[in-house]
Length: 228
Image (cartoon, rainbow, N blue to C red; front, side):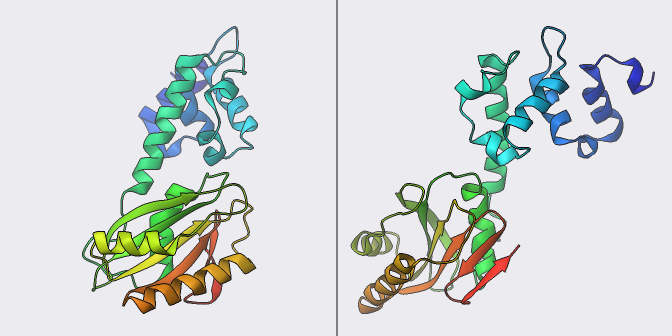
């Protein structure tokens, strides 16, 4: 039996079995998650409508509310929950460390790779700290503030206290620019230099401050924007 002879609901599943999951488009994968359509509309068509509402981006679909998904005819709460769960699993896979735990972080791109799965789909600014030991090996990471579209607040004393608690020797500060432009603002520059001085006074080090957008980042340490 060829794919055209199958029902619209069966085609993505059969294609996955025959050719492997890598052969499916984003819409076809989403159709497998949805399982069925409704009222003459196939699961694939529902998937295409959802992706169209997210401008074709899985990251935007991940950030879409259940209420908005359910505005699409044929997408009820159960289907929407299935989509959210599948996308969250993908996000968590991306959050698993790609840098070996015993390998020092020596380049800004390593920190970018660690944080981009967390920050890729954010519509607001978040500031995270990567805590490193004396060998520059990541021991833990933590969000220290969450702001609006344009700003977050960095509390030097809070970071120093956390470094003492975690027995960290140095940190890498990471925050995102939802606008897509990682160029540091005047406030970013001021806060970075202030934090660097505060840490130096008590014997700690700020190794880098990295500003992330979806496909590029700015590194204060390397003093350049990198397109990934």
